Length: 272
Image (cartoon, rainbow, N blue to C red; front, side, top):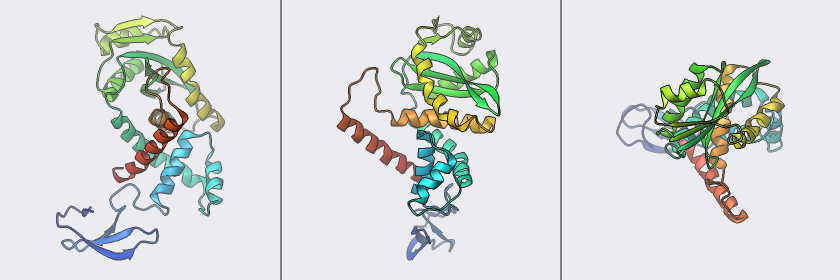
């Protein structure tokens, strides 16, 4: 463990631990004492990082309310309010989503399917741009307050930055701004198709985020909507066991892959 205050001298480990069980270390150069979470976003949490990470994961992965999560953990002897869950989601969901986006850089295919759906933000409908490749893998998602040429161009630019390459073909559902946005952002060499029947699978894929935010009766702000939708799609992609269309995976293999992804999720604490 290196000193978070910038010194290069190896610190000296102490036997004393924090109230949560984290080992403390004293730097022989700066004379400061720190522990495993010092200098990370989890420094001042009153609960174990693994517990907070699990709450955030359940919040994103399952249709649970803030109070549902507080009651579920109360049965295990952990007492906190639903507002604590709200704060953890706001602080750590975007952070973890960024790590997941970095992990899948360059993994999307060259044929994209793009469509827009709605999310309810304070009683007002906002547009959610989403794109998947031909195997159903996530390309990118973005919440926008408007559905116009500027929003479409912003989405395509962001998608290219995320996957680190431009597509060879883009299929849309007929949104009038898409052809121009594709031409000006991705270039004239990209084949653009307009076909509602070909985007049907993506429309079905929208059900995931729609079912997730529907029990919440809308989202409280544009920022929270943007963070939730992005984090939800990233978590859903990360824990998905199939990387190709109609790929056959046995139940035992599925369980093992989920275990491996859970271990990788927990390991993100070290780099978060």
